[in-house]
Image (cartoon, rainbow, N blue to C red; front, side, top):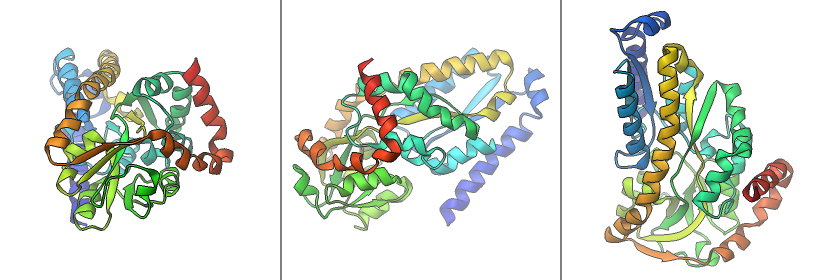
Amino acid sequence: MRKRWKRAIAVMMFAAVMVSGCGSNTAKKSSAEEPVHITFGHGQAEGHPYHIAALQFKKEVEKKTDHRVIVDVQPNGNLGDEREMTEGLQLGTIDITVAVAATLSGFDSDLDVFNFPYLFDSREEAFKVLDGKTGQKIFKGLEKQGIETYGTFDLGFRSMTNSKHPIETPEDAKGIRMRTLESSVCVDSLSELGIDAVSMSFGELFTALQTKAVDGQENPLFSIYNSRFYEVQKYLSLTEHFYPVCPVMVSDLMWEKLSDEDAVIVKKELHDMVQYERKVSGEELDKTLQKLKDAGMEVNTVDKSKFKEAISPVYEKYDAQYGKLLKEIEKAKEE
């Protein structure tokens, strides 16, 4: 409860800054003395590629607008969890955020299609689909919610950790109580492996692992390292079963605060930030894996073909709902 009050107070403080510090929309656009503040909230730690990219965006926007626009970057879920921050876009209390597609399925159910296991074979294949017509078509549903997307951040693939034993085969996963994303597709996918899959917010996860409320979790390497899960998890199995699709989202209301000139700059820097984050992510993946080994985690690879086969019934289960979109994604891979 105390955590939620802190988040609410933080959001209200930023809303106050936007109102009192910048005046009305007309004043913001015309005044050369009062900078416009835009808020960029995300849920990851300071060393995460999200934050590195957000700070680069801040630097470039402020420099190229001669500080007419100030970017207030808030990491660590300071402004709420991903769902709360996405709702903040609709309210205008937050201007920019990033969230995994599983969080966004409540805003547009089509986005749950990105949560299917082994949907992409590589980061590059994912970029091709997400940046192309098919990806943009699926993201377009958010526009009805007052949210625009400007590409997707990259986190690499999600892999499993736990405190019991290495997961080398699908059979090793049976009976492990594992936190996953808040998505029925994710829960059902892991359940096909015999995992006792549990949905909970990311902010609650470290404590749940520490108290043994769950045995394990699955996340990208960056999240495992920057959230210090190695302190409460011994085994890391590189299953790479989900590719987390993480759109960069902007509130429609943000543009009302910006002059036409500054809006052009911000839009360009949003696109540049996505490319920068992907570059940082690609460069840091192997380094992060080594850091996890150095921190004492036992790391093993798996035969992913066996996991694909074991988890595949989930595609049939959701064929009526997502079969058409899945076929479009497969076609986009070949174009």
